[in-house]
Amino acid sequence: MRYSQFYIRTIRNVAKQDSANAYLLTKAGYVNQLAAGVYTLLPLGLRVIEKIEAVIREEMAAIGASELLMPSLLPKTLLEATKRDKSLDPILYKDVDGQMVLAPTHEETLTSLLTQTISSYKDLPIKLFQIQTKFRKEPRAKSGLLRGREFLMKDLYSFHTDQKDHDAFYQQVADAYTKIFERLGLESYRIKASGGVFSDEFSDEFQVLCQTGEDEIHYNAKTRTGFNQEVIDKIPDNQKNNLKSAKAIEVGNIFRLGTTFSSALKLNYQTADGKVKPVVMGSYGIGITRLLGTLAEVYNDEHGLKLPKQVAPFDVYLIDLTSENLGQKLEKELEEAGLEVLSDDRDEMAGVKMVEADLIGLPIRLVISHKTAQEGKVEVKYRAIGEIKLVDRDRVIESLG
RNA sequence: CGGGGUGUGGCGCAGUUGGCUAGCGCGCAUCGUUUGGGACGAUGAGGCCGCCAGUUCGAGUCUGGCCACCCCGACCA
Image (cartoon, rainbow, N blue to C red; front, side, top):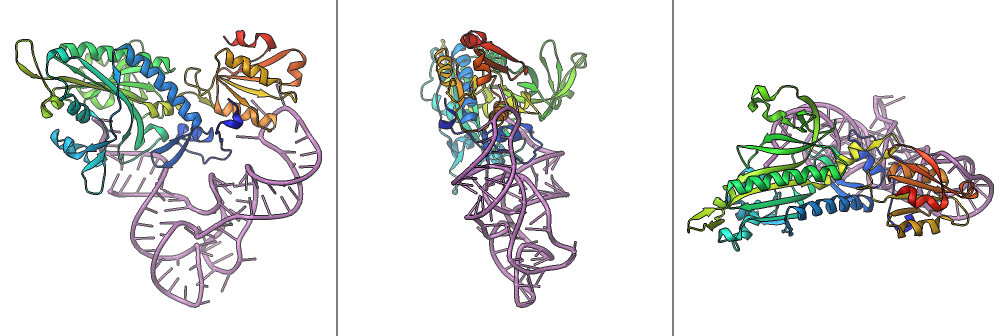
């Protein structure tokens, strides 16, 4: 991809902000703020989001979940059926006559849908997920992408005959979540937390250690488990030993819903012996936009972002300083080898390109110049560790592999 | 929703004490020089001073109200 044909606008003077992710992602041209907690994903940011989504889709497929896409609009009557029109009211964006709201979550929508297709134990289990924009009128949007009023979420819902079947799937989801975050370059902790309006039981949160996080957690570094501060008084003393405490960002959350929603919306099925029972449900969320913010918080230094390869918008930032455009051939070879290359073909000084390469933070920077070309070399810089070395022109690709 | 802060060319800011031609830096345009870590010089373009009302001969500046954004707290399915 040629820089000149891809919309990138880095900003030299961005106002100092407390939130590192907002500052860096804005300065590097990944996002643009429209209002409090409302951001445009610019082309660079969108590419990261798409990489995050690709990992999530793979892991959802691996646990047998099918993807669908539900509407953003939600009839208020559906929320009345589960009495959540009251509990969710403060965070709802409503239309002028209050008939429709912008959906903050989709338990009602999907449960209602499945009443049309579930009638027998033979129809279960069902696992459906979507990647969709959520709307929540947060009393206080803050911390850049970490708490928005409009944000992307992966939400998965599962439907089972009984608690035992659900428990088995719940554990599968927990494992899948740990794997997803690991694949994205984030070490997550499975943390006991309150069930919120969903349940009196504990829910499980997936937390990434980070100073900017909103949550205070107490965790065991070895088992990668622990407790959220909000439930610490409910935890037996003998389980609180040897825990470390830290701030963390909640990147995922899984809930046991039991039959709360199925009972309210009459989502029932018949057992083999003809009895009618409510379906047992679970819901599981991953904050995708928040993950972009988390990655920016975790992976940066004084020069800018330094994203892991698996989520960086491109693999290589190619700077060609030769007047003969020697980089063009290299660019083609790299792309044929399957690497995603951002080729800075602008008529800018070398310094500008170097600085932007560090700011945008792709894993590898290649520089081909008269100096290096004379020796038949290309300069390779690894952004994450800062190492710079000269590699033979014809061995660049294998050295990156 | 309580407390604090800030709103001035696209972006970052000064100017408000003490009322009268709206400034600086970055970016942008043109020309020249420069060319491996956000270059230099010259000449330019670009502003409902957040919004509304009030005081006044006169308001970016004073008064009142409102709105927005940031931070702390409450809240956070």
